[in-house]
Image (cartoon, helix red, strand yellow):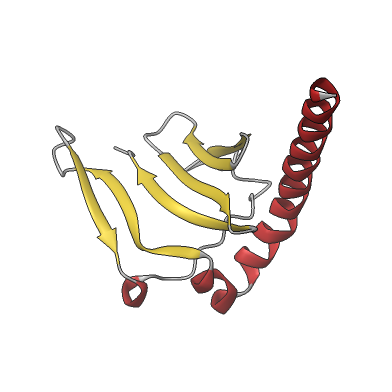
Length: 132
């Protein structure tokens, strides 16, 4: 009896994760296109990590809602082939989080956006720019 309960729980958990990932695709499309929706799906103050001007140390700051500008993470299909500022975008999916990484090609671009799934919704919770 206990084994069958565990199996049912694991199926339910897997279904919830699958639903969350499917919802992420819908979520990120709306997040990119609707600035008011985006503001409601960021945990402010947003943790922002970046290098100092010399690139010697990591600085942690917090972005307030009033200082946020709309972010569009739609992948630019020609970004990989541009002459300047070339980058590729990779999406890493975990149990309850997704990381969107922008990695430069022959340049110093290295940016990641961390999203977590909680309270039945996706939220941007961390922004890291280690570009140099």
